[in-house]
Length: 418
Image (cartoon, rainbow, N blue to C red; front, top):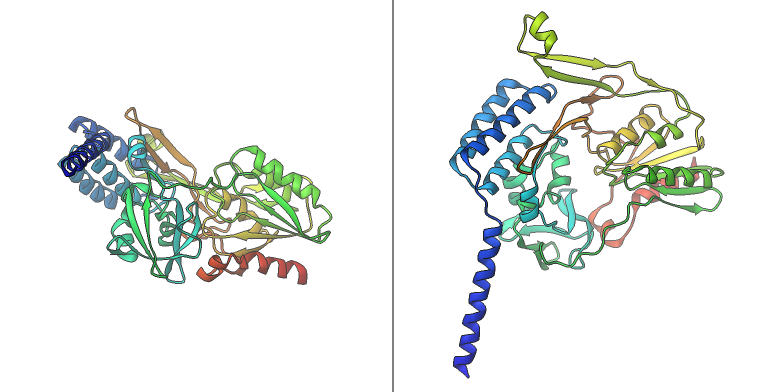
């Protein structure tokens, strides 16, 4: 009997070893020297040509370090991580390197989002039953969370340290496939990215409801992806046209689309658009007419004014924002702030928005590079700073644990008293 059990154990170990070897084989791929050099040279050319306000001397030094790294190994995983770190060194949330192979083999999501709040790493949203909003993360495996973040922050494309914190747990390849979280209450939770059962993510549909019937309404727009989300929001504004105040919630809205349709419908008077600037190395004008060639040319536009149509709602508007409102969400928020059309409640937005130059390589790698730098209409800096609220308010770890939405409560208080 013991021999039979031993035989079964050996068989299971063998099958486990075979399975592990298959996983390792799947997650290992070699890149020839020619392919590595070709991709890196394309990356250098694209960044040098399109990235706005590039410090070429600093970039060249970083490229030399990057080149020395990718020449040492033909491992695709190592190449991808080096490329992610190289592009992340630009400190721009819209400039990133991506590889479909890396996503397939190392891109399983961790299942939750956490970022620093009041000096602690706090779970903000979760699709796992074992990790809940409000949980404080103290360790990942044997590393303090602060040390783990410091060691891996270099791979995260972000426009500021705060933006990097928000994006950190949304960058799966930097995490082990299986790891243990130690939480502030002493619990230890094993995260198995490939096998954890995750709840479905919230749908993108826009929602609307009365908070105080006939007086205060609430509309949440989770994304600007597709025209449907804005059409739904506009219908909500029509349904609540008699409201004394409407609270519009765009917290955690990642953009993903063009928000102009809804934006114009809410503005009540002409407003200025962004001041934008771009850089281009070389080009016919520089080659033929500029003694500074091959330096970069700078082009700026500052006089764009948008004249809205008849607004769908002209009453009092309160706008809920946070650090996860990014990209097109910030494009939507900016004129509402600058033209004082809405009272902004919450946290400063992410501070990262750019038109980009997108490139797909034949081997499945992708490179997205910011090509336009946005500043506020008065020329003040936006990138890395964001759009500040008029009334600053954020949830604490205890608020999240108890399910209290203190930002919404503050907006309701403002809507009811002013």
